[in-house]
Image (cartoon, rainbow, N blue to C red; front, top):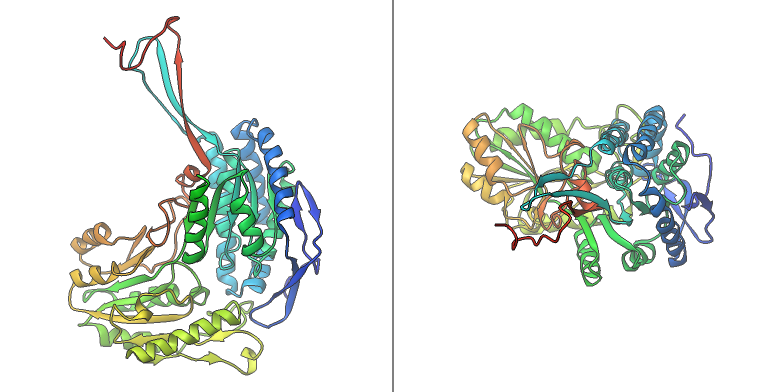
Length: 497
């Protein structure tokens, strides 16, 4: 029996209170088509209330010593750990990803809590020599104020922790808009923050659409940072709006990630990495492998191994331990994948496996698509350039290492890349020349760890990073401090002799 939510209607969490909504929409289990819960469709007034609460709370929260702020995150981490299985099952029901992946995602939140709690005793600035006598110089981090975070449905707890934990430990207050498709993790995390003793107003959750709640957050003058993960088009629009307000913005958007398989690669290992990267989360993640750039000498052998492995994949409700590929999030996502299958066929790519919706029996009421493999794809084709966000992989043959690097770099995105080779010289050239924010060697395109920066180049983002200590740069401002104890006027750059 799967874990059940104790309520049928969620509420916003504003200023430490659960605030009932007036208009709702249904949250559906993508594996079964059943309604799980109803979530509020909030208004700009709800955003205004949340921002006002955050602004008031932040002033007091910033005065709490950072090690004490960190203690709240430690408690959050322990509560996440205690409730890992419950949260994992709820996550699978609202998102569809298989249960082992859901457990891994909750573990990311646990890891992030303990890692960022450690920053409460660091948050390092620098001390540096001053150029004048009897003068002290240093830099330190200062909180920005009120932070707005907008998170996607595909990693509803991991990405939320990447953003909220560094913001909170740095002394900010947060207004959070989760995706309407997956609100349960936000509800559960808000309850955990409440139980951990986070002061009222330091985190506020407002459910609703991007067009209403998201836009209100982006436009609100008291929100000084927007941290967004989602589509490229929406991210560009947010960046434009924030730019006009001189508002800080952090964007993590799409990817068109490739696994390069060279002629000296361990093909069985490469197949394992490709399957995990391409079909985990049903291909619905920004780091998913959607291109395999394969040396022509091993193309046939790799195709044969991939087809054999794909035929053994089990597809269905992710709550069952035996299932390896779950459903697509909704009908719109399914329709988009089907459109790209037709695009690939019309472009002249060869469809080797899959390419169709799964219906009937255990797939009857959910949104399922067969893992799909195209071959003989050229790098200019749309299926090799555009993000599909589904379990679709394109094999692109190349003649050399240099061509493989060129093909990898030919897309507008730059999130993750991978190379399978046993040539150490190629390894070092690849990590230098692949223009992505993340590079894997003899591993797939997924598997980022929370103590390293997560993000990409080009159309994937705008230079900021989630996770790692670099996440603190999004939610803090650098402050330079000079203390002159000479008792007289000293003019920098002038009175230096």
